[in-house]
Length: 471
RNA sequence: GGCGCAUUCGUCUAGGGGUUUAGGACACCUCCCUCUCAAGGAGGAGAUCACCGGUUCGAAUCCGGUAUGCGCUACCA
Image (tube, rainbow, N blue to C red):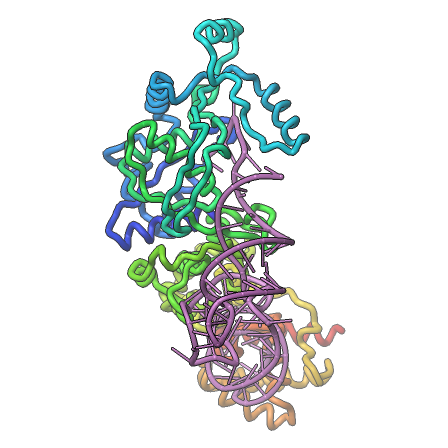
């Protein structure tokens, strides 16, 4: 989620300024490599409509866009830094480092590499190398001084070099760390603006130090606020959906997701809530990005998604709902579904759902050949089974003789019937609703009956009567 | 522990010295509409603007301190 929001802000920023949105896959951690993860990410971006100008699949002048395919570049940079005296080989074992850290923590010292290998002589180096340890490459952080930079969102930020240790550039498996790869690539790829999550703020001085050592002009940085869960912790799997694709399968619309995500940390003014993509692009600016983390509010997302669903045309709603019906309707329902039939139903539920996934349970009775429900739904408030039977028999009678069978004629006949039977409208309609849909809460009755048709309605009333009679 | 940053209704936020009895949205409550549920409409409740000092005629807005929270402090990104 956080990554997707970061991607969105990058995309909005690029589109607003007429720049390029570049997608680079930072797959430099072998241990965390997950098969298919990249495809999922690309799918998510595509679904949201965040198209990239350079990157996987579309290519670009500065490819490849997978860091795992650019190892040579990082190696060259590391070698250059070593040659210049800005980096060095470190032969310390991870066991020693772990121990060192534990000791530092115990003594309440700031944890960090103790620079044991920083000034090894040629002789010592050769000795260590002979020991069979594959070294890592560390950056030789200046011991004194400080680095300041002007973050586009946080303003002027300063860090003392004394708080930065000699961080690793190249791991012993030959892969670069984020720090190295990121700096090398941003330079090589001509990146002008880096918009990333706040968690990177404190490592920015390291990056700046590297840009300087490498003789590269650094890009502009903007650190975005984080997205938190309801417990104020960084949003994670524990908080429900994390992958953007989860939202798709839960029936959220991409436009709503974008709108909602954009408002997490950014706002235009004190009242506008609904933004189209082009309005977002037109109005987006870093100056209006907040600095504080925002909690992901599912309720508001639901409301916003509902608002977007209500704005859909009948055709569009139908098109979007179809896959959910195909997926969620019980197997006994014949496929493929009739698009025309679905389209007829849509107006009845459009303003009643917050997600596309909520449609199926509401409209299942339009498709299911056999309704299965408890006879209790036929006996609404202030009714008895006997009364319900009477009501249904009377209704069946009238329904079978009714001239037309559209919503209007149904209503014109049913309303007076309630009066005639000495019932409140809700009593009659509720009973019929139960018989026809098997639901207590359902789409509007007349419209539903019209779509189901006379024959089916009458049959369902028969079945309802059977149910009541066998109570 | 160190460093950096933040702190306005439960949540997302507007507001950056007087126009603020701090505005909007979600959620919540009431009423209207109504065949259920929604949607829609009208109201309501909800924030001593973290706290303490200072600057000022005047501070949510500026300054300092405190508290709390978050991030970083990995051969993760």
